[in-house]
Length: 427
Image (cartoon, rainbow, N blue to C red; front, side, top):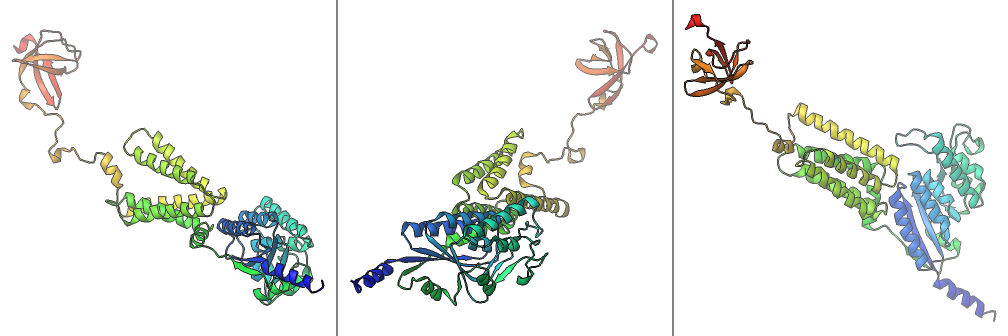
């Protein structure tokens, strides 16, 4: 009996599967999509544990929050393996795991929340993030004071190099001392042995090429660049004959934006369809006067970007940057390079109708000056006179002239022919 039990335990150990998943580079929505896939796969295959190998400088708060919920919602054993840094959002993610292990020389902390300009976020956002850090530590049975010190400069922990005015960043030794690490290991193999899974099947989940592209595209820094390139290409194309490289560049950039957000799970096909409808309406506006169709199209395009984005504020800033680039390029094309939009050439009359080019709107009949005739109608002061056999529209010099009175043409200026009444003395 005594020899049978270890064999049964060994057989069970050999049947176990451990997943190893990297958490690297900037934390954003694309990373969440990848980790969500990895956790789902591990749950489906009834894995015994997931080791998240963390090495990140941090990233977006909203993405980190979703990843934290992902860690706490799974029934699988989660281990954060900090190799080499878990800063900012990375620290928050690690705190949401069941256990934390670190390699020698690793760091964890410095989790202040900042905006896209690098400045401290508003008090509301800071309060939310501080509460999230505190809650993550408490849920895992850790003293929340150190999590607070990572996110709030006012917390005074001088013994760990984080006096007032400084954020806490724990070293491997400090994390072990304060209970923010369960142990220190040299590498992944030693961690697996420490966890007791040396006989388990190790399955590493890596990002697919599509997921890597999606992560790059959904990066908060890349999004405004991508939209700016798209607007730049399309604006230049409007001022260029035919369809060429600028237009292809603009369309490709915008399609890449939607592709990345579709793969990352941030957008559905409805956003892409709405974008296509908006572009179609804008093109239709070039041929249908009124302006309403163009306004609807513009709103549809803008709405499609917000629909595809996981963060309304970031998308609003990105669109403003892209709009600024488009306006700046348009000014340069018109004022500096003297270009005109090619579409406007098709719908706006540009031909000159000047006299120098041989155009005459009304012929001046100077040959009529001096001729006499009879008023067919009273002139008040305009009316009709009969000159020979021709009826001519004329005006008097200002006075009223009755019907059947003799008149003389004294001036001809284009279509304006002036007459004067003849008195008996002039007969």
